[in-house]
Figure 1 (cartoon, rainbow, N blue to C red):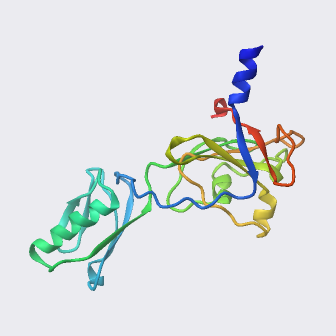
Figure 2 (figure 1 turned 180 degrees about the vertical axis):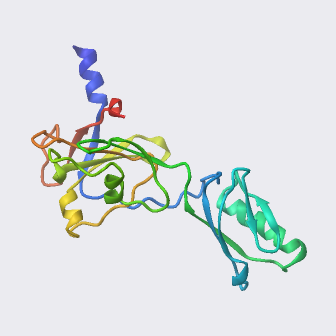
Figure 3 (figure 1 turned 120 degrees about the vertical axis):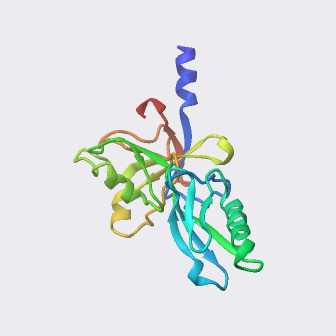
Length: 213
């Protein structure tokens, strides 16, 4: 009994009523095949372009042709592209690279949705868009208490956000952007989300069961 209680307690994560903050740009992301890059060259707009990284890890750019960028951060890709432009075409080029779509990011969506599963997200994807990927909620769904589980920075645990999806749909709450590896649970109507009372702070604890995924 004690071991069971301890296991259950370990699955409790702190929860807050409200939408999570939008994820920050991951400056440590390593570019991979399928990513889409926005490339800008200062004072040379004609050299800017939008490129999808090919299976071989390269992009094709005006003037310089193929440049291998797989495995680099955006900052490292800026340096490599600038070096290629500086070789024969520009003097001290200033290059900015932004990853506008990620090829390898996923979210898991379970509970009372029509098509639960793990879904790739391309670029900026909101909670409503994620629910749509899962076929929308069922008629049994408790839309007022959709839970978004999100990993804390540096893998220091998980936090949960209890979002009123109906308010989001009505425009009364911001539709939050999803982050890589978010886990979204739509509970069944009549189920109790909070395992401890929620007081004036609108905080409590919810049960996180990784076996749902």
